[in-house]
Image (tube, rainbow over all chains, first blue to last red; front, side):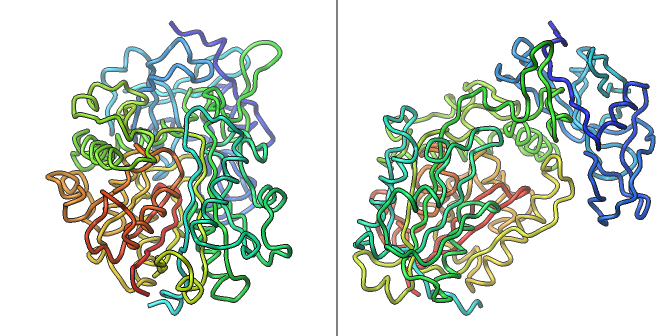
Length: 137
Length: 401
């Protein structure tokens, strides 16, 4: 049974606040460099590709593919003690190679998880925060 | 070829007890290992005038109390009676345990000191410490900050999950199966059964044992993970000339390499970097030593998680990309095979000494001290630590300078 109240919630900091505010508004936004166009995730004080300082958050399509996945069986993951085994996917966003995000997977999608499957973002309300998740399309 | 080739040597090795139930704090285990290494080399403690370590905890959030969770240069400096006026030290935070060894080699060649003591002490943290950067809140859900804010809310902040994600991708890309990991785990266990220091010295493992073991993070099972232990391994490095006058035959350091490649993603480490990052280390390792993978009589390849060994076989050129899974079959990596791998049992079966066990075994093999595991006539052995898509450092040791 899922008990979201026990799961860790993200602490937004100065760099990540627009990302989490975007999620709260139902939009996936990723930090992007104005000089070279590179998407940085997690957000950085400078661009990982060119060290540029002109960074802002740009909306992305919310579409991508499953880069890889795993099923965790250990019962010592904070907030997930009663949920193991549970699945994680890594999503490669459509906007840039190796632009990766971790997510869970809706129970209904568990059986169809495979590398390369197309996914789209949805938003899960965790009370204190709203977090992006992905489902198979 | 590197001009420092064969100019330094490892002259002594010392082990503390390696155990899941330590009877003393980690700092005292480290002192045991350091004293044993100095004794093994036949030195007096006051001759040791250099110190180097890689003190990091096994994962972030595992604690950093000096002498309990980690053993730093400062701890050894303050607690062991060595040279009254130590000349040199280095505490390295990147690469892994071969990195301070590499620093020591450079310092010795530069004449900065004469006998360097190197150690790696590792503590087995409490399981719940795995929730890195997650803190309980006075009310409501725990809080995840820093990079963990993008991982812990999804329950995906541990190293074993990262490795499971990579191995899943490897299997998909090259059509490999768990048979490859079983072959590696069984090989390590057979070798550990010949190694009295190994945690699993007295426990054989069958193929069924491997496949019946519980999942940790699918597709990795219990026997794909190293054994967390408390313990320390130490060694003495000196110049080749000085080493010749000491008690043991020297294990000459022929060359070294470190991973200097740029990773393509910084939040996770991904399989996609293993050939580029591992290859950046291997090029330097082989070119400095003037030797290649074909000249190695054995390979000690890091196995904090089992797939890393497979990745190194490919990235270091023992076989081609994507061929590791077939390479490890048919006895090729056994003690009497074409390329004996992890002849001491690896971290999987000796215990998690973060690559120090690999270096110690390389030394034993080229100095004829590997007992029932001895590869006849072993003249050149490499020890490579780290996971190739993340970090790594390595040396080649040789019987002759």
